[in-house]
Length: 282
Image (cartoon, rainbow, N blue to C red):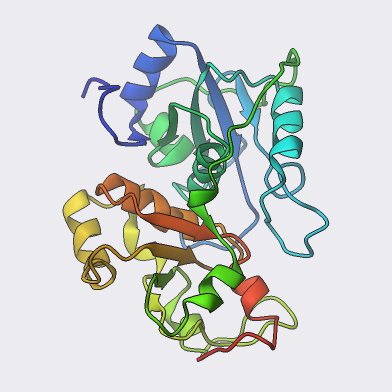
């Protein structure tokens, strides 16, 4: 399948990615987060797409003063780190990870909210690239030239706990939780100490794993079916939450793929809400 840049899809396959790399100014970003996920990697040693840069949202692209695991940094901090990584505002960016399509959607959201144009996720990650027969390297690219990256922050793609609490009982927004059903229902304890079990009142549950199959996003028809309970509330904005803001972005990317634009990510997610006893739970 040839790549169509006029398509609104942010997901690309390896052949389309290779085509982009050949014909455009592309920078490739590898990301990883140390979460236990159901995806089982077939890799027995590190493997990266040639010239990949490491986008580290665990330790670098994060607000370390927030007290939360993966809080989005300020645009100023984000721009400074992008500049040090050698990223150009004009480049087409392609993100992939080594856990299928698990953490790359988080980076897609971060780049999108910071105003970068032409951002894509390699569906299926490094394994899809290898399965398509393309070459890999054993190390990431480290020799970079600093740039002067600039952000154009879009606040509409993010909600705070105050935003959600303010509309909690008037049903102005639909909150969709990407955690497992057991965690959502408070049956399974939270992995982080000091965080209560349960969920935000009146929220819906859509486990992110239902949107992925063998590390790739399911087809759009299935995505629409899975989103049907949330989309029956016509014209109401969707707010995506999870444990710490990572898998909520899988829901955000899936929504984007089926043409839903009225959404935002609750970055603090349950790590923040569940730890604050002033905020109600079910």
